[in-house]
Length: 449
Image (cartoon, rainbow, N blue to C red):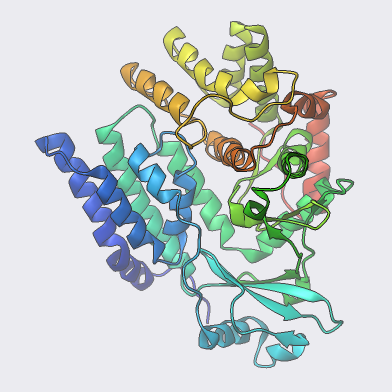
């Protein structure tokens, strides 16, 4: 029986999450309208506790929001950042129902062995170990029940949170943020789409010996079931105390895993969560979970490079051109100066031709937090700004990876790695490579503006 989005499913979801979201709405509204001072830190902790027990997209959204600068107040960011997609797994009865629904009553014959106990539980599904009939190790991801209804219900709740927050603080218009998150979450429900993303990454990273992508078994994959090869590796944080050279090597491989696809084909892995990669014995990287992939128009990538060059040469006109390329319009000189503050921070590690940490100034532990707060205050004074949709996951990848590099305390020459990637950059060449890569993976071309 198909598990499509349903009114009943949405109502059930609203009942489960309504009290948490309603509490946020009431307290923020009382603070703004009635002047009632609430303990945001305590309420944020309560909200995290409520969301942490839920399977589904609200926990995924919470993780996303924790890495998008200024989308929510700092107290909420600090709490939501602790969500690690570790809700308890569903038991054997669910597993048997799901596998039967996807592969038929004799599904166990498709595998040599299948562990009914989940090896990992995430926000939209859980992963099981299995063995292929030829003896190969497999990872099998099963989507939780009724996720289509959960996504639609949670997106409505998120829209409410954003609407309340915009009335409380209009520095960042979250309209495009919601639209982008909605598009990616709906896409993430389709595991066959994720299998095409994996094929895309395997092609784009062909030749990168230190980055590895699982192989999909298409005959054992459906919209709600994904079977792939199991890649052995250790958690990245296991290497936090490793020698500097080891941590630098891991950071370099992570950099290439994310940015080779972006600068060569305009594609980025939009979920830099610590659980989405592991480290191999040779320090190579296993890149995992391809549900949240963002494919950019080639001109957007050109704008990223133009802004870097504008910041490095103090070329104001080129900076304005980059912002306009992305879809900003009607920017005042004051807003441009404020946006340049954020750009200067993001590009800072790339501007210096020397080994350095990703962030060298004193910080509270959240990558970019101090600069983001300064930019936020200034934008609020200037009447606010509406970031283009593409910024949501681009910014998230940059900030998320920056946080990972901080964990590793990596000291490498970011400038040279970046320049190696953009040395022969050409928008037309990227467009051709992108079209070839997407066609090879069975994905449609990016719509041209």
